Image (cartoon, rainbow, N blue to C red; front, side):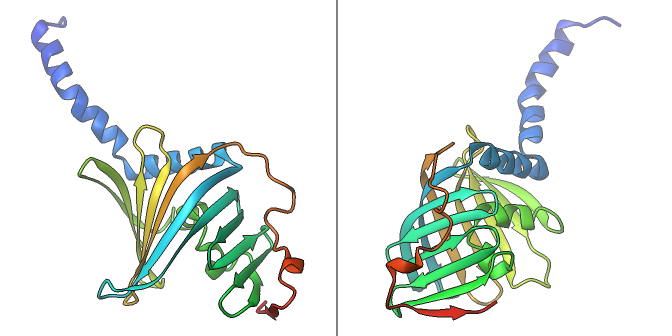
Length: 209
């Protein structure tokens, strides 16, 4: 049976739906976002976050610059600084003038890294893709044995880059993170992911490892 104009018409009619189904596959889209972030590394982004209670009242908010490469990152904000070199994480709290040291691979340490969150919850989560008001999001529903209930990732459909991330805690509110000012393939100093302890001579060191 040859190809008729009717066959071609229905193929062209269904092509956008078929393409959308391909693009909206949650696993494939998440893999593409992860691949893009790794390919762009070392990268730098403007980073802002707001922590909300269950009633949507604001608990804390801050902004700064994140530098990221694999499991290493530094996050310099107005009120605190966080550094992770892949083995150790340092957190400096300006308000109390203390530096906390933890193991880099603990969830507490890495849950500030968008790349770690995406890779850590790549398996074991129920995933879905939503399009609301023209915005593309991947929703990760985390199993009940985690303190995190779900993660909502906002993605630029053109570049496959992460633009925002909302982390919902079970009965503890949620954290809203916005990422922009994206610079890829940056060149950083070798010690960019380590805390410059000497710059905080009065800080108390609290080693929690």
